[in-house]
Every structure is written in structure tokens, then in C-alpha cells.
Amino acid sequence: MCGIIGILGGKAVAPLLIDGLRRLEYRGYDSAGIATLSNGAIDRRRSEGKLANLADLVDRDPIEGTIGIGHTRWATHGRPSEANAHPHANERVAVVHNGIIENFQELRRELEAQGHVFETETDSEVIVHLISEQLNQQKTPQDAVAAALKRLEGAFALAILFAGRHDLMIGARRGSPLAVGFGSGEMYLGSDALALAPLTDRICYLEEGDWVVLDHGDAQVFDETDQPVAREVKQTALSGAMIGKGQYRHFMQKEIYEQPAVIGDTLHSLINPMSRTVELPDVPLDLGKVSRFTCCACGTAHYATAVAKYWFEQIARQPVEIDIASEFRYREAPMPEGGVGLFVSQSGETIDTLSALRYAKQQGQTILSIVNVPESAIARESDGVLPTLAGPEIGVASTKAFTTQLAVLACLAIAVGRARGTIDGEQEARLSQSLIEVPARVTEVLQSDAAIKAIAADLIYTRDVLYLGRGLLFPIALEGALKLKELSYIHAEGYAAGEMKHGPIALIDEDVPVIVCAPSGPLFEKTAGNVQEVRARGGAVILISDRAGIERIGEYARHCIEMPAIDPFVAPILYSIPVQLLAYHTAAQKGTDVDQPRNLAKSVTVE
Ligand code: F6R
Image 1 (cartoon, rainbow, N blue to C red):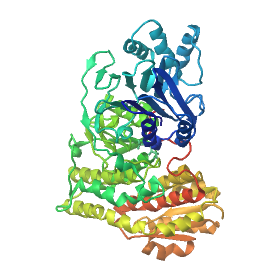
Image 2 (image 1 turned 45 degrees about the vertical axis):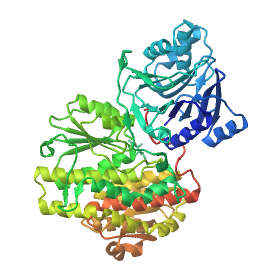
Image 3 (image 1 turned 90 degrees about the vertical axis):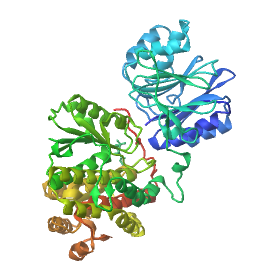
């Protein structure tokens, strides 16, 4: 989604703004721009497409100034184009905006009637004219912004620059996050802390409805009633060095390879390896007395909750409901007394997940969240947080965030099972031990990378691919299909293997590869039957299984990916790796934009 950076500094600001935008690229965007004050006048450079286009433009036509704002835009209202790119500006004010102004049509009509001339198709441009209208009435910039904010409906994070005011920048947030960075004699605004990482490690997060007035040395924060408020300034652990690609070709590849380490870090924070027991921090409730867990998330994070449903039910006999957050938030679902709302999100800012959380809170649920960004809105609004220790995930497609979410959910299932008395100490030790061994097994799976790359070469010309799995592997089939379609633009569907006969089998012919995730275990023979059915119809099976599984049905497959023999409990974590690699190599060999697939955004902060 869109990204914001603002710098009120002492040096040439254009290169710093472009650098900041680069760190926001991972969020997804289709145009970008910057505005500065050059001799007191607003100057802008904007361009469609990648940031390299903007950087080239600034090289050809430099832009001066020590104060400026920048933006990466992911189109909502108005197509991606230079004219619609932010900053939007007139001769008095320049604005960058994340979010959606819901009443922009009504405001635009009103402002046009007052003589304002609009240049773009965007909702954001009304903010420029609203503020200018107030300035025209001789208000100070602060008063003009305060008045304009009261007219806006919808979600926004804003950074605003004023002609002739080198010493002033104003930011505001409602619905979309905005961070204030404190430098020495410099101040910053950023849509997330990563944008500000190399500039400062002192960050203050604005709260809902806050707006902030920056000068060179300080920030004055006001709440939505315009009362001055104090907001805590925190030290952030993010550093600019953490976001390079290292020896890898893509961030996604690097992040796939980081999984042994980050799954290990996450598990170490939750499992005592000596006693082989799960020790959860920060869970403000009796896990043995939860009437129901209602899990909400989006996309890949939703598939993590789908795996968790099997775990919670099998290990803890715990009733669990899962739902896609965008559906749940409008379903008006009744929620039980003594229930827990469990929200899973890498970014911690996904608007649907955040809104579902707020609904669950209103319904009296205790709120637990599993997030990768500890300072995020979802974390801040939760009663208890179980962090994934995946580190910054830059590739748009979730990889290490997903497997660390699974690691946390597996530990939570064990803790709930223990609290409900459905597992004893010995079973807890066995399950914990199988988790402790996961990082080493992931390293083994990564050794199949070259073989998986060769198999992916077979997929790049296909139009459709099916993924099948049963039980704990059904969500991994869904995840595999999502990864392949979002990265390679090949149509893919995941199915519960038992559902194949109820429709999808009609699609199977020699042109449709079927990727089957089938570890040895109680459900193996059932899935083996599905493999035979696919073969009988000429379909090409790619079998992901362990040695025993491959010995049993490998002869019916065109390709086999051999996995280590493992406890079925941890199979979803391990089997995520080959489906990630298949999608990665298919996309990389097709030549698509692996780290920033078209139309996608890393953090979906608008509906
Ligand atoms: C797919 C992917 C998305 C995210 C989804 C939720 O690879 O990354 O489906 O999982 O947008 O994002 P978060 O986890 O930030 O709430």
C-alpha cells in the first residue's frame, strides 16, 4: 500500500526522500513522487511506475530544498499516472496521503463551487483545496489543518508542506498509521518505522485521530479534539542494515532461506528446551477456560489460522472458528461469553483484520494477536501479543512470516491442550521436541532447492495448476496455490484432496499439473487414491512426500520432491517450504517481478 516519508532537515532532501521511498517499495505501489520547498516555493517531481523512473527524473531535473515529503502510491481512486501521483499541491500547500477519503465527491463539488480547480481524479486532492480554502480565510497553517481534518471522512495518514515555511511540517492520522521520527535538529514522518530506520531510532507512533506539528527540533502532538497530548517516544530496534538482499537475487529468496533461523528464534522464545514445555509470555487469561477461539486474518495469514484450527481441535479439543477478516467484520457474528478473538497478521496494520479485532473487542472477547511488527496497531490494540520473530519481511509474498505464525500457533495449541488437560506432560514433550527439530529439518528441505528449481522449469508454460492436500496439509495446498498465482500469474487452485471428485476433477488433463502434498501418516492412503485418479486421467502429478510415501506411489508421479520423515504435527511448517520454492522459481524463471508482483501491496491498509 501507499508509503509516506517526510523530512524537515538541514541538508539537500531529495536524495534522502528517494532513499526513504525505496525502503517503502516493499509495500507495493504504481507511481511515486516528492515535493520540496525551493526558495520557499513548492516544487514537485512525480512519475508513473517504479521508483527508478522518479530517480531518473530527479537526476535529469534536480529539485532543491531541505524540507520535503515523498510518497509511493498504490492506486485506489484514479488510475496510476503521473498526474494522479502524490504529492498533490497548489502554490500554497503540498500533501501526501495514504488511505481513502470517503466523502471526497461531496467535498470536491463544494470546493469547485468556491472556485477551486482540480487537476486529478484522486480523492486525495480535496485535502489540498480544503486546507488552502482555510488559508485563504487567513487562518494559520495549524488552524487550517485542524479545520480541514474535521471535514474529512474515511481513513488517512497525511504529511503536509506549506509554501514559505521551511520550519513547518504537519502530519495527521486516522485509520492509517503514521510515525514521527526525532533526529538531531531534524524531524521526520513515515508511514512505518522502516522508512525512518537509517535516519533515526527514536520514534513516536501517532494514535487514532492525532495530528502533529513539526519544527526543526520538536513535535507537538494534538488529539482529535485539538488538545495537546504527550505520546511516548520509543527506541526502535529496526536498523537500515537489516533490509539489504545480501547474496540473494530477491528478498523473497533471502526470506525463504532465513526460515531456519527465524523459526528457531520464534520457537526459542516460546519453548523451554530443557523441560520441553511451552512457556507463553503475555497471555492475560486462563487458556483452559476459553469457550471458543475466533481466528481472523487475511490471505496467507488466514491459511495459518486454518492450520491452527486442526491443531487446536486435535490437540486441545478446543472449539475454534476461523474466518477471513473482510467477511467477518461485516457478518455481525454473535460471539460467546468467555471467548478469545485471535488475530494473525504480519504487518499488524491490515485494515480488515484490525476492524475485525475492534468488532470482537466490542463483543467482549479477550483479544490475542500474533504479529510480526510489535509496534503495529493490531499489537497495540490487543490484550496479549505473541510476536513472530521473523524480522522485516520485504518481499510482498509472505514466507517467513507464515512459517513463524505457524510456529507460534503450534505452541499456542500445545499450551491450550495442557491447560484443558487434553495432553499430558509426555505428549507435550513429544510435540515440543518435534517443533524444536523443525529448523534443522527446514535446512534439509532447502537442500532440495536446485531440484525444485528444475521442476519449476516445467511449470512456467502451464496455464492452470491444482494443489491437493488433506487435513493439516489442506491449508498448505491453498497457500501453495496462492503463492504460485500471486508470483507467477499462473492460475492455481488449492483443494482438499477429498473434494476433487466433487468438481475439480473435470479440469484434469495432461496440461494441468497437480501438486500433491502428502506426508506419510494416517491420511496418506486416502490421498494416494486421489493420485491414482489424477493419473488415470492423464494428469501430471508432482508429489511432495517423504521416502516411504515416494516408495509407495512415486512411480505414478512425473516429479517427486523428497521431504524428511517427520511427526505429522509439524508437517504444515515443513511442507510450506517446497511450495514457496516452487512458486519462487516458477516466477523467477518466468521473469515476473518476484518481490513486488503486479497490483499487490505488502500491507493492505485500505478496504
Ligand atoms: C500473500 C500475502 C498476503 C498477506 C495478507 C495479510 O503472500 O502475503 O495474502 O498474508 O495480505 O497481510 P498481513 O499478514 O500483514 O495482515
